[in-house]
Image 1: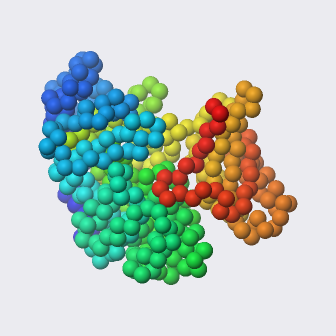
Image 2: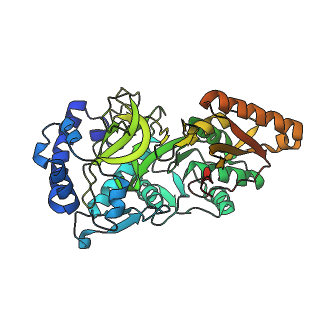
Length: 433
């Protein structure tokens, strides 16, 4: 079997667009009739579900954003009575009220199928032993990966995140072949294994599927080298039901979007104008099969590009590039827009440092300053102050030359920076302190 679901993954464009149009019309009517928020929002914008005649008409409808979800916390956007809800997930809520995600039984089944599609494209098969090191709780990652792997027929180890030494022991004892976790935690596991004298490259582990945070191609290369695996990506968000929205295939050249479930658009984040294929902008999704909480034109804040092109894997699903950054994570320093991923790419291009860093923003008078702490390799740090200064100057010069802003780079000793067991915190904004 080449694809998990060949009917949709390799569907001809005309068929897919007809399917999307029919599903979108039904979804708009469903939301309009069952969610007062959408009824009011559509009427305020002067549109109704009947105004959608072609897929391009979606641009007539208003956006949904994170503030709308928080304003309607916890279940103001739920389109079904609570007795039809079988599960509730939520985001971490670190910057306010969490984003809730109710699911019907059918929603759960569809999500599991999207995840199975994701994992199968990464090379996961029923013979695999999958170690799930995502948090098993309100966060969608843990159970999303779990149910997708079970759908394929894998043996799943619900290890959850944390207890990193135990993660390594489980890999040894259980013969883990597939790892699920955040990319930053994969590096933490690799570091712990090295401390334990365990060579992960000598274990049966062969593939990892990582997501839940922005990570660069350089980070992928580091993970693959340190763990001796192929590092694949799973993209998703709580608002769309969790991971499985888009995924790597064997080509690792863009993420295929499950567009039979999610209609993507790229907009200019300032003007909100819909941009053509190939243009970089903010990713917007409309879910077209969810029952409990369908979202119309949800602004993800993720910056990427959409591409429709032939793929050697045989899938015809539209592709999105790796997320470049988030519009709300963009740093503005001396009038220059900077994404943390740009800095990560530059740091990881220097072999003398480890993929462990933190960006610290401060105020100096009225000016913003950027400071970067990055760990060196043990042998580099042991070489002394002169070598350390040389690397600091080298990195500062690369950053200044690439992004046009001066950064104070400090090489810190190995294992100085706090390790991540989930999403890594790469930016500390101390400008208001």
